[in-house]
Length: 66
Image 1 (tube, rainbow, N blue to C red):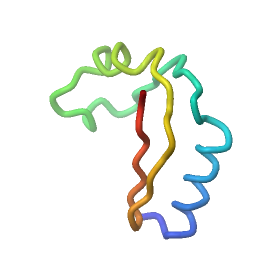
Image 2: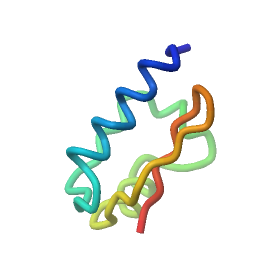
Image 3: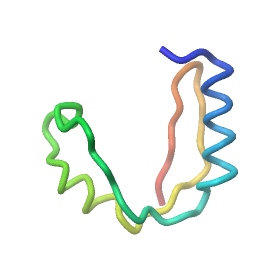
Image 4: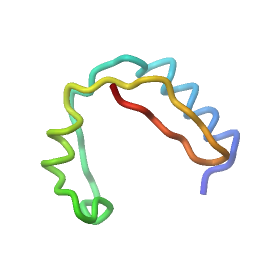
């Protein structure tokens, strides 16, 4: 589990590099993490969407999409 400073660093990095940027590609390395969702379905749902501001609650980081 990452530490709080690590999560805050990741949040700041995402906001400075990816905010409002369109997702161009998705790479699913471990298909078992998706359980009921196929990698192709996830890719279809994400490509073309944009990242909105992030929100951190403790050690959890939430990234909202448009």
